[in-house]
Image (tube, rainbow, N blue to C red; front, top):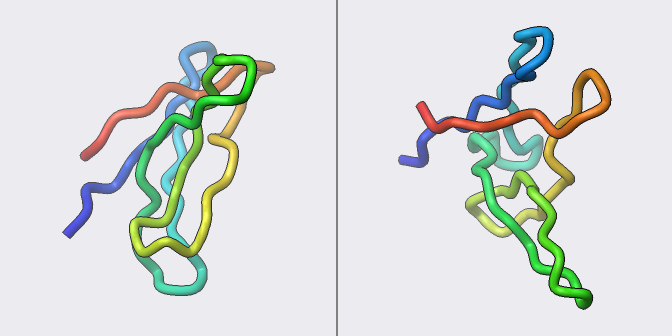
Amino acid sequence: MCKMTTYECSKCGMSVNATCAKCDSPLVNDVIKLEDESEVQVSKCPNEHGKIKSPTCCGQDMTCSSK
């Protein structure tokens, strides 16, 4: 079973967990590399249903940890 990834705002402390609506699996943290070699933090379904840009809060990406 995958560990739930919790995203937390370092400024205000808000936190969020996310699951895939197709399979109800917890989304996991990942990074994708763009053509210009920069990296983007994403949350992805462990069952290949897709990925989303990781959440933001207070104008910045939320940091993540697996529980």
